[in-house]
Image (cartoon, rainbow, N blue to C red):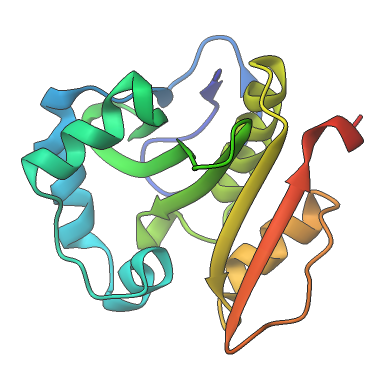
Amino acid sequence: MPGLATSTTAPPKLYSYNPEPSGSTRRARLHDLGAVNDLHHRCSLASRYARYACSRRELKTSEWARLVHPAAGATWITTAPGNPATVIAVTHLLKTRTPGTYELALLIDDPWQGHGLGTWLTSQVLRTAAEEGCQTITATFGAANTRVIAILRRLGITIPAPDLGLIEVTVPLNDRS
């Protein structure tokens, strides 16, 4: 995924595609676990709950190893502009039991939420997944997660009615142009 054009002092209102990124998104590696757990520690309880449906404070080495292993799908980290050691987002596109179907999940550092990063990451994942031959993306989240609902709507994805407080979205990639 290309980098992000941003400033180093505060999150910008919009992200743009920039071949010379000041912040970057790249495939995650096993040695990124410390920085990813630092992100978890900085995120509010509400943000962690929106991602995991629990108050998870950090990932275990064995969990992270599974998430970054190519057999699981793909995991990317996004680093802060001017500070490549600080992870501000983790994006997962993980295989499900259904061939050709992957699950999308994001965790974004609280100060970076509401500035377009989630929309940008989601659009990049959808494009990358389609290019890699993925047929369907799914996402499951709480009905109160207004940020995810807004991201998906901005990308033209229909949001179904909640069932028992959860929304399960299925995005067939062959239907997207």
